[in-house]
Image (cartoon, rainbow, N blue to C red):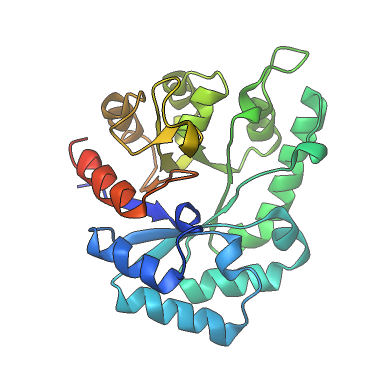
Length: 253
């Protein structure tokens, strides 16, 4: 049965991390996904302490988000983080709005840039990929999308598909799975509330309590190389509710 992991960024407003890890484990999760805010600046001793805490809760961290600056400028630190925490898949998660190209050529070049960054990590045995938001699916002047250009420019890049952001960007996730399924190595699993609801949670909701057709999507995604399915909710009000209701829904898919 496919496991559901948990992106720790969802719990950034519910510190301390030690309590979060206990709650995640008690709710039945066995995997978590890391992000820069919890490990980017840690020294080796602190990283080992975090690894010990994961181990003591029966948790692994097979995937992690790493900012582009860290990946490009501090590769030794990024590799230390991945090695110490047991991360196998490294995903670059975002590009700030003021740095985004405005045309297809610029996004193709960005894909090439990511591919160049990726080499060091791929040579060390890691999966390296891009994690999308919504802006990658907004049409460019030539009719293509940034996501197409990124994946074309970085032909060896993996893709951590955030399905709900694809939808919010105006894309059809089934079509993207059909076209790029071989590139998908991890998936963000989250749900979109009915229009006008959950505005205090930025329009997101617990898995299985929204509008995304996850049952059908999981059938399609299980045909891809994706092995890590990671629960995310960008701004939950209630962490316990998110954890328990979401894993219960996922088990029906």
